[in-house]
Length: 417
Ligand code: AMP
Image (spheres, rainbow, N blue to C red):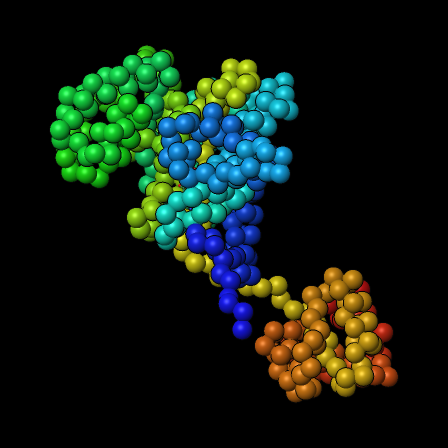
């Protein structure tokens, strides 16, 4: 026997039952986002590597060690998309969307790829639902996006949801704060973990993420970004908070909230669920006012979020989704009836009846058992000469008719004919 081949580490198959649950989630997302003015967008599964190097940030974990990068036949460096915001901003610029009424509001449900350590809730190919509003710096955009994600998580039944909120300010303020934090970290270097110490120059903010006890103690006394926001950034953040209060969306201010991507400015947020283990993040996002310009477009503010489909499915109370009910099971009274029966099944499907046909060489008894198992409403037992017994399994009645009459008979009885 040939050795078995398994799905690559960190990937999974979505089997029909789970696919139905995910389809229901997609449906809810559409119902919440489209009426709020968000239109669906699809971007390619891979992009030129430069997009993520510039858009996500050279110093981020994603760009440093998590990208699936390859050369294509023409020697171009391409990367399977690790996230959705940079590609959407690329599309915004490429299609001149800044000429449309602003903000341009888009949503997506796509798969993303990161070479991460695979574990429960963390995969190498995963799906995200995301929303972006590009072209307005109104704090109502931030509040609208956060409120829509809260509504989605609520609608799908994610349990134990908490929202953490912060503001990173503007790039200039952040740069000044960064230097302040770097000198503070250097002054306390001996108490930090090696990893944090080695990254003081590259990414000092990540020190807030550390689990290392010494580092944590240092970070408790560290200067905080929220306390050093420029007046207009502080005002923007206050307005976002006032709107969330008005909308009765609960949140906690989290001074140590840093997101794993470089492009954020001003508002950042993260939703977690107590129903999840170590990987407790269900969704997050923020404002990225410099990103479009960084990708070669005009200076354009933007804001957005992404939420993980698998995390939502793990954190939401299981709602079993039933397969499509079967209207008709077409059975064979004898093997020679195959073609006639096939004609009945095809006619029924063209009439939009949910129809299964016998495909496994079962005995008549076996076929009836199978129809029962499927909870089919009707069974048509077709003979080679076209004589057909039509059983109504719900009513327990039965009649004889010609094969060509079966579909009309069912439609009439159901008031569809
Ligand atoms: P991020 O794009 O890193 O801000 O992640 C946004 C959301 O996507 C997270 O809150 C998770 O729900 C989900 N997510 C991120 N990375 C993964 C992954 N490797 N596997 C599964 N879900 C993920």
